[in-house]
Amino acid sequence: MSDMLITDLDTVAEVAKAHQDAFEVMRYMLQFDEDLDDTALDAFIDRLATPIVAAIDCTQCANCCHNLTVYLTEDDSQRLGQHLGMTQVAFQAAYIDHESAQANDEWGCFKQQPCALLKGKLCSVYDARPDSCRRYPQFTPDFRWVLDDLIEGAALCPIILNLLLKLQPLVDAGIDKHL
Ligand code: SF4
Ligand code: SF4
Image (cartoon, rainbow, N blue to C red; front, top):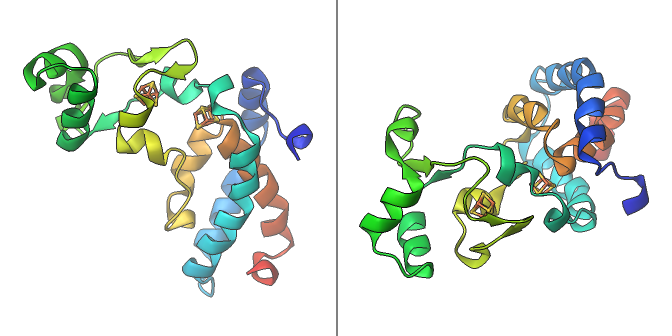
């Protein structure tokens, strides 16, 4: 299915912009469907996302590492500091911004964008990367209630864009028959 997927990042941004209104209509249809079963919808989204995630090579992209604010927990920081052979004081001084993160009720975020731990298109701390990096892009649980964030992320992430493009005609035709 990889030949059907959009992975060129300029095209991703263009197509996401062109579909913005249609994605918003889809969000509206899903969020205002009172009979929709969230568990069944989430299971369907996971099935739809699996082959897309498998077909897109994140090591050829890294657009999220370039553009997103990455939030960390204290556990993430401990793990990363250890991985890099640094004390916590030194690691946090070098990499963590507490002030900006706390304005968003988070423990910390990386100071630099693109992420300072990105080397070329590869994560240099892959095994120890923050949990938020492991989870991204996260579609479930509660897919329809995080859809506004996902629509925003579609211009940046090929996985999100391709998932929304596949889903949109199914929602238009009536998602119930797929659940
Ligand atoms: S820690 Fe690794 S996966 Fe996370 S943003 Fe930095 S380079 Fe990307
Ligand atoms: S998660 Fe999305 S934006 Fe990040 S590297 Fe993979 S395809 Fe690219």
